[in-house]
Length: 408
Image 1 (cartoon, helix red, strand yellow):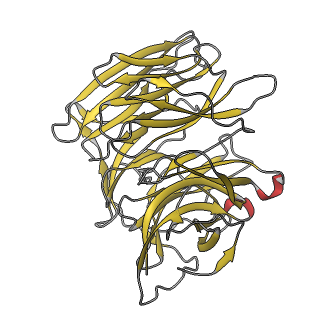
Image 2 (tube, rainbow, N blue to C red):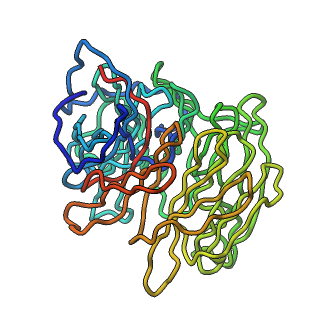
Image 3 (cartoon, rainbow, N blue to C red):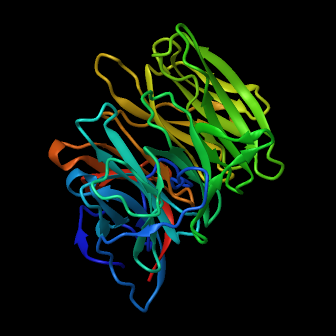
């Protein structure tokens, strides 16, 4: 293990797993900045030193501690290993690279005197060296490292390969939650970031999701905010020929209505896209599209959708949460089986279940929900594949992301 360990509430296990859980999806991405190369600045935050022995384990990476300011690993037996603590920033959007060599996360800064009170930058933690590097600089930081790309905020991201990720970078000040950012491709081995280009120029959008083989990218673009209606477009990008296909396009009734294609998730095999419709003007439902634009499945059984995560490649299973009763909101984890093309009955009734993450082998599902002590934050739960066991692994954790990590 790396660094200092503390024992949490444990769960019995005969396997040598460590859970890395705090990004919504197994293959989540790291954030990158604008439209040119950058030289990341090394963080001065203390990092654990690597030992001479190495062991490969399945782990959960998450944000822990006061204000979620610490990046930690949590084992399947409840042991917590702190990796690095930010300098006053909240850590979120954690995503472990496919090989487990890197952990990407956001450092989010708040300026209560600003019109738009959040700024953020992308951080990459190198598991082998125990060092972190900053790829974007927020103007809300008290000290701005020299040479970094300036971005008002870093949004969603998705790993494309072991060393590359797509990042949404806002090089302007986004005053609207429905804002397109620059889609940037960052290489964490060469420390270079460049715009993702299509057949007609550099791409903008939000909510990137990548197939398991790194060949396809799903993302959403917002049209200009009009006085009455706003266009939402679900897109599919091919990394090989740089072609872009419109999978679906819909209009929201008002600019303030929630999204038609919230939280799009491309299936691991790149053939389906899971989406959520999350506002009163468009209805609360989920829709699964084939990439040719045909609807594979649609359900309006939820009053509000929350998080979702595809299982590993080949399983055809996606877990998602959503409120079942608007008066007494509870989020039941449900499962959509793409092979059978139906939704199973809700498995649990929970109090606002948040982030979900599958283990790469499909044997475990991690999720978070508010615990009994609000000061400590969410509880991290671990569920086995047949859903017969649900264990609280840790209190005070957020943003889960499973991955295989080689501890040095």
